Image 1 (cartoon, helix red, strand yellow):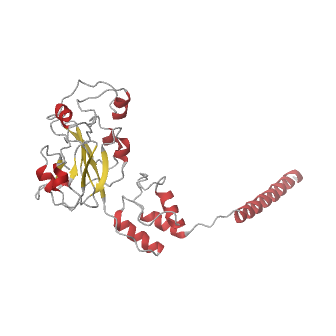
Image 2 (cartoon, rainbow, N blue to C red):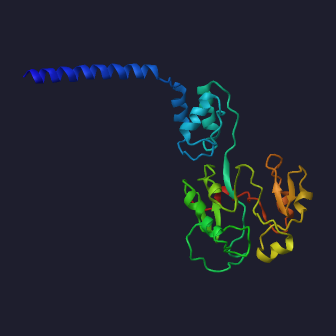
Image 3 (cartoon, helix red, strand yellow):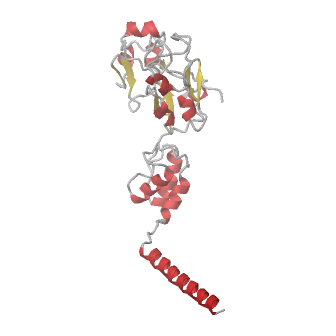
Length: 274
């Protein structure tokens, strides 16, 4: 009986000592958490896509509260999220235009030829590393769908051998752009619908041999642009979206019709079936 009482007493004392030690350690090493961090985290969409440059939404929230990131750092949330976070942080959030993914390739099966049937791993990067080109164009979309697999919003599909984005579903996370081994996908402001749908840097005659829809670098678009928003570098037209007024004159004069502009009755966001 005495052994039981002694054992119980020893265990009780040990428990008290350990508990007191934990309390002391907790107070000594306590790191105060800014309540705003949790509030900011609640505002973020939770995609954890890394498009903001941080390792997920938790890290982005911590950076915002610490002053290491602006309140509009999340490209997925856009202006609405930025304004809510700005209210928490007591800052004015600058308007952030929503961005969407755009595939700079128009080389469908109708305008370029396949070099053969690919029977390897259905992954674009693997195909590139193997040294294979599935079409005659070295710069074009491979069409194996790595971007489709990377998209968490099911916003991309492969149509006639080329990846196409459904802009209604796209949240601008940029994961598809990271997945594309040929860097064909870029994020562009949603309102800027005048875009060059080609990435071929070869000279015009070489382009026409491999793709009937490729940019031939003729510079007609440059001469038509009154705002100086278009340049031709490495035989390929480039648009400065900040300077572009969306007048559409470049698209009208483009002989290859590689500068896309949506018809008034058919916005760009409708180019892929929902």
